[in-house]
Length: 182
Image (cartoon, rainbow, N blue to C red; front, side, top):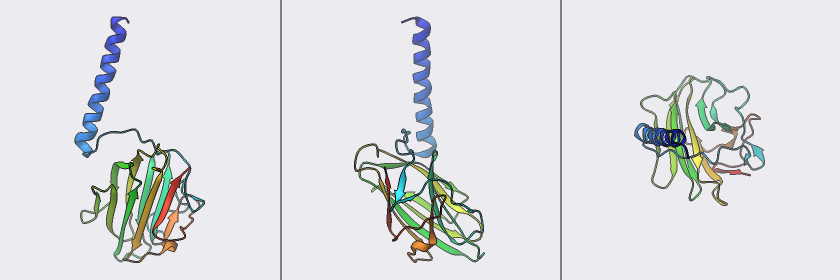
């Protein structure tokens, strides 16, 4: 191998290691390839792909969930400007985990965390604005690891009619519900 090729390889490896270290330092999560970001996630036959049609701040009060080429997204909003409590959990299948979990427009009093059992928890107080999270799931390339179990509540109530999934705004049959890839 030529010395210039070796130098480029070494520089590339060093850059990758530096990027992984920066991700770990900034997020507290080791960088990993988001192996589960492909299309094909479904809930009881309904696609969750694409932003729900008509979603915007101040839209009908509910939880909006979708998946696209850049990962998973969950948003809450309400047409009524009064405070509404949106809470929930998203559990990854054994062996899978959450990475790149980021808050979207949340207030300081809103909470978001992933526990040691690989369950993502959120608690938002939403008015007519938007609160939300974006995330990726890794490790689901293996059989049996391509599911998420979502339990989403508005003001403490489980109501599937208050959950819109994907661009066609389908609703799960139950809450909690399972999203499956494939």
